[in-house]
Length: 151
Image 1 (tube, rainbow, N blue to C red):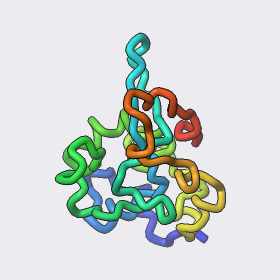
Image 2 (tube, rainbow, N blue to C red):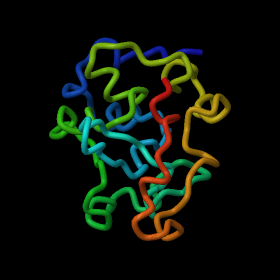
Image 3 (cartoon, rainbow, N blue to C red):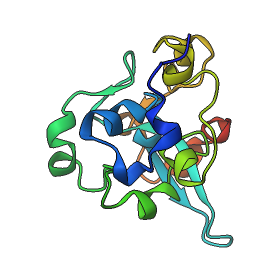
């Protein structure tokens, strides 16, 4: 079941209302994973290490309103920084896809009509992460994963 008001197809991200903007997020929480830069290739790679504010069960931030204050390197994407942040977002990120002029995947809740679909199809971080406090110092590179790049 698709949403009848398909605003994401007719509006640019920067034209969306606050509620429309917020509804574009698919809730995968991949943007809540720590990232590293390969020094040789300058490629950004994801780890399975999640932000301390992430509730892995719901794939939601436990302090969404204050996330940037509490986690200075939080990727708090908004209309003002979406262009800069999108390059660090996973390829399946709805904001990145729309910015690139691409369609949202069929499993996205705006297309499927259900926020459960993304979890049912294993497109989130649910059950796949560890917290930074559980990673030994200097061992972040041992947690590099490639599944966040799956579309």
